[in-house]
Image 1 (tube, rainbow, N blue to C red):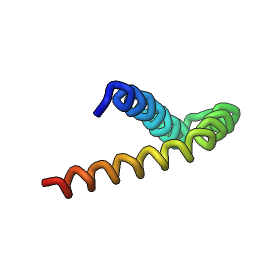
Image 2: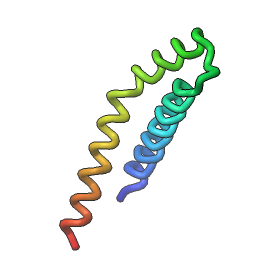
Image 3: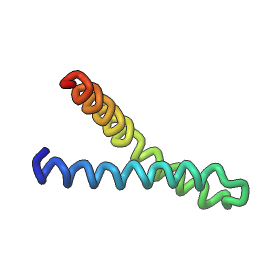
Image 4: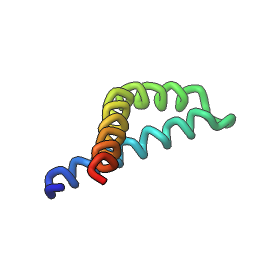
Amino acid sequence: MTAQMETMHDRLGAIDGRFEELERLMGEPDTQHTALAEYGRERAELEAVVTAYRHLKSLEAQAAEAEL
């Protein structure tokens, strides 16, 4: 994997981590309504990128497995 690809994976991994954090925050019972709305908006903005990234990781894992 090239350095550029590693950087892309690092950035996408960070976005995925933020997405998971938002889901956790949204699930906490003491989250305020205004914060919940803000978290929901941010999560919605990240969802398509995270879905594509997770699909990419799945395809890469399948390709690596096929090489064995």
